[in-house]
Amino acid sequence: AHPEPRVRQEVISTWRRLGTPEAAARIIKALEDSDAGVQRSAVEALRLLGGVRAVQTLERIASREAPYADAPAEVRLEAVLSLGRIGGAKAFQILHGILTRRSLPGPSEVDDVRTGAAGALGALGTPKALSLLTEMSRKDPRRIVATKRKERILLEIGMDVTVVEAETRRPRRNRKRV
Image (cartoon, rainbow, N blue to C red; front, top):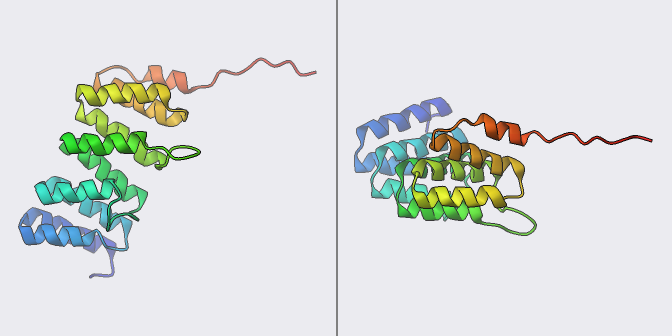
């Protein structure tokens, strides 16, 4: 492998353009690269390449399945967004799990990945996905994640997001100091 990540990313782009099964296997192998940027390039190449094997690999990354259990959050985010663009019932299941999975004392997912899952569900645009987004935007105790979901819902249905931005500003309390 070349020592420069940018060169390795360009090689991934070339493999994607080739589109052969061997090229797809090399792109999947590139997910093991030590550089997260190279890994993200491989995820994007898989999305563009398509096919059963590519989609299954994206699903495994998003779901933290072996050997991708320790994938960096930014790589998982790219896989999540890719699943939203590709769509399908399995994509909905995975995105639903990411969005709703909880552990004590709070959500078990990184906010960026959860917010990405909300955006990906919005991209799916199915009634089931939009219903889940609406439900989660009401329930999520973390204001920023709920706000991002609301923004995604409004964007998907063609409404102005400034309404949501106004909601995120906390009103100042009038306290009298003694």
